[in-house]
Length: 496
Ligand code: PHE
Image (tube, rainbow, N blue to C red; front, side, top):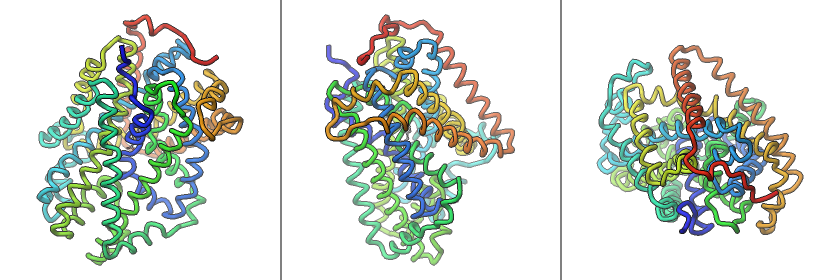
């Protein structure tokens, strides 16, 4: 019987991985991160982060996934059965992220719908915060349910369910083969269009105006490492899982490099488009770019609709294309983060893809309803902080130690080199994954925790505590539940 969890070709694997990497992080997050962290000067920490962290770690994560050809959890059990609880923690954290990711997808779905008739009206700011989200910055807002937002979030979950319930190559594989090239084509169109707008140069000059003094600030280094992590879906089991679905002859090293190049090219390209459009807006309204630019959500759902308003009839074409691009970028990422826990369920509890997808989509959809309330965007920012500042980096640190030291990354060198073309890994790579990356991760984690300790809000602590309990209790339960397959206990290794 053909394996239901195999990519049909290596190209599908690379496209799917690019689909996972290119997501909201590239369009919603990156342009502002680049702008607010020194503009052109940001490229120095950004490149350092790619060379020291992204390339070596990605090869490690993909390499171990490729070696075990199983879920992250099962691989951890094979490496050391006693570590099973940890093997669940990472997939559950990624699932928590998937749940809040579905919220932004829902908002984007609404804007895609509205963009056909500029339904946000003349004042997109009021529309977003007052009319649509009824935003309040307190947990009290949780009692005010927003059915319109909920419907669009459920549509996202429905799509994830429809795609992921099918055999891998027929569902996810096909979707990525079509969606990922399409994503690049539409984005190229939008960016080229934006570059031709009057005033584009004003925006680009503002974006790239380097503030070299910031290089001495710890924050911009943190921002670069954080961005690279999120944007490349690094360390979160997505790359691990996708690489585990490959056939036997894949060149993991070059595939990984292709993903990094495509992802980083995409986000920088997207930033050109975003800032050209902001430059146009600035020329049109006389307001400096620095006052128009804003962080992700406001950028996409306020600044962009404002621009589509002044673009007249053209806005009715570019607007839907833009929100559609964000949607495809987001859904291919959400599908990959969803896959991480789903395959662990399939492996341990002998579930079919269809069953694991149904159960997890139902849980995810129900849990996500917390965000379809007036407190939604407030809780989302707390959950994002919980995931990105507190748990992920620490958990990736543990992953790095387990892969590099307990599994022994040395073993991967020949295994990966044999299947690789001209690019080989060796001692430098090993040194990076054993020493440099764990140190970097701890420094980044401590930096992120300083922000957490600076918070002075009981509500943040309440949400952190709830998420922390959900994370730990569910991971313990999943690890204690008896496995339904004998496979689970098999230890076989492909390399010695
Ligand atoms: N890389 C995705 C983005 O840029 C986010 C993501 C992280 C997806 C981890 C899957 C796993 O939006």
